[in-house]
Length: 109
Image (cartoon, rainbow, N blue to C red; front, side):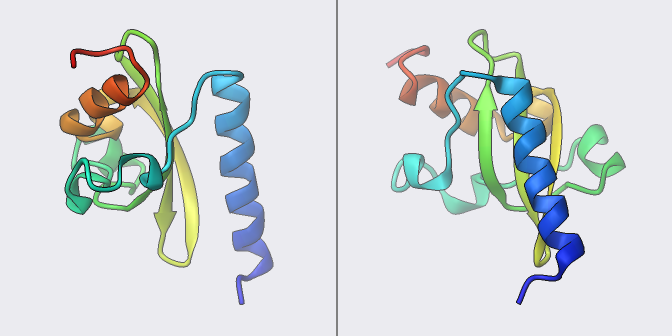
């Protein structure tokens, strides 16, 4: 069973992301299943990700800006979750940023 503090963190992470992205598309791993290796669905070991202790954590949901420069992600943090936003390649693998743009009809085919 998820502890109350964790439930609050997860709900807060989802709300923060929803407020930030407003009506922009949000993707989840099911949207890219079979199109990218599972290990690409993790927060990279960037300076930002290391600072907020998100590096290497599995992505739950993400949204990439239309120009592909920034992104918002909700990630699994043990039995809980967290939220981080920043330069897309700081919070997501470059291959996933590119694939996300393609899935959304924004990138190269």
